[in-house]
Image (cartoon, rainbow, N blue to C red):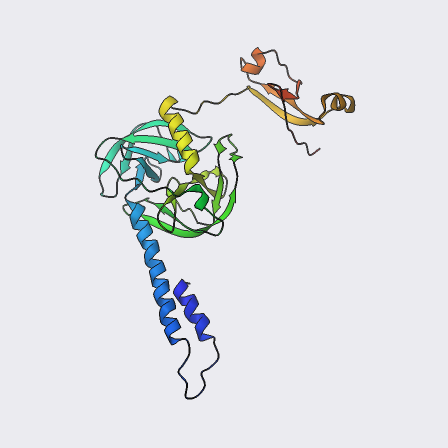
Length: 295
């Protein structure tokens, strides 16, 4: 149902006009209809404004993914889970031109991959200020799974602070929408009603949930991939499970729960440091571990 049709139906439910008087709402009908058309045209303009920055990514026999022009010199961001291979990548532009693309790096933990193409400068979208993103805000998800750009309309349904993806990737802001991400939409941009970039859509971070990677996360990961080809993360090489401490130990340690080591990576940092199975971690580098335990 469009904005215009909602307004017209609302007016039609009004009381019948009295004899000898003009029917009320006629001018209102026209204004609402005009306003609905203006709003619809504004959304179409937003799609056109950013469509040249939305590309198709070919990475094998799998269905094509969508990518976003990150910088005019040929950097393209897309989702890491949508790439089937590291070589033989191609990017198809709005004009239909196909360019070879090289994979600079990918981070599965944050589901971001960075490609580079060579050729004439590419258009980049304007970015929306982080402070402008609000719950209930109308947004557009764009993709290019084929020759032309597709768009879906929705709203920002959830907005929260920094969080960690299941794979350990740091995401500076949690953004969830009710936009249906069909095949090919992952790796495409989420934009506001003015066509300004909010972030990159991903269907690979949480099962059955479409999320948006904010621009601040994209900036950090892109810079790291350009510098190192990967995200450098520290690791211990252990698997663990929370466990409640005996009362005496809990009293002396000042905490009730620790992490029991249930696995050690052979030759990993923890094993080299002398840890053994069954050890209980209470702190790391002088910082007490905050652990929850359901038992």
